[in-house]
Amino acid sequence: MPDLKNRLILGDRVNSSLEPKPFVSIVLPANNEENYIDSCLSALKIQNYPEDRFEVIVVDNKSKDRTVEIAKSFGVKVLHKDQGPVGAVRNFGARHAKGDIIAFLDSDCVAPPNWLETGVQLVSSKQNTAFGGPYMLRKAPYWLEKFWLLEDRDLPKSLLGGAIFINKRHFFAVGAFSESITSGEDSQLTHDLRAANYDVIVRKELAVVHLGNPTNIKTFFWRQVWHSENYIQNIKSSVIDPTFYIILLYISSISISAIWLASGKFTYALPTISFALFLPFVLSAKRIKRSKYPIQNTLHILAIYALDWTYLTGRSLGLFKSIGKWLRVIH
Image (cartoon, rainbow, N blue to C red):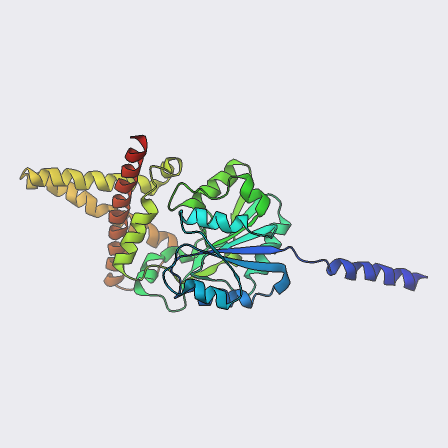
């Protein structure tokens, strides 16, 4: 009789272990990602999670290259959302998701084999919580990636759109990603979740390798313009970001310098020009200190400074674009 009881108990445990894992929908927005999407989808094929317990949804955003062709070769679900910013593209995929858990991954990101299993365990273990992961550098990063992403070892405070795990019900309860902004929708989602008393936790175990970082100055500059062209539209987030005020100081210094130079008063212009050139150094010093980056020579400092100067210039242009969009709306 005791043996039978033990067998019954053991049987119960075995049966409970055979309960199916949560079904997960992985949503990937894609716009001209032919250089990266093969690596992204290949990594998802070798996840240590049951193949019948997750789906991959690629939402094409009017790609003109071989993105769709490559995605279809993997046998994943391919949807089309031609209009709208990336937030709208992600939302479109989420609305077609079968899973109770949604994992957002970007098409230029590569997830490690345990990424899906780890994300599901975290979401399942803590109620009312969204989890995210940081972006990591490729094994042999370009110089620009190396000197820009000094804080690669630091965890971000907000969710990054390319590595998010969230309960689908919670995602839509807070209104999903904003579709009125062209960038920063992941930061806005973080704000909305916390405002609705959900927890947001970024874990290094959910890190993904980001292959789509800018690798030249031109691309880097326009990426900064794009990231800042919603500063006014996201004013609540902007005013609590210290960098926003550095950008305002930078614009003011450049503007005052231009006025002095135009009036021929070069002596007056020198202090404001010097101050404008000093501001990128503030950002560089802050990044070096936070990351504890091992500076080896003067060229490293110059490279870091050049990127921060480009960053402030691009963000300044993006702010003007944001103001322009705001003026068009109110008129």
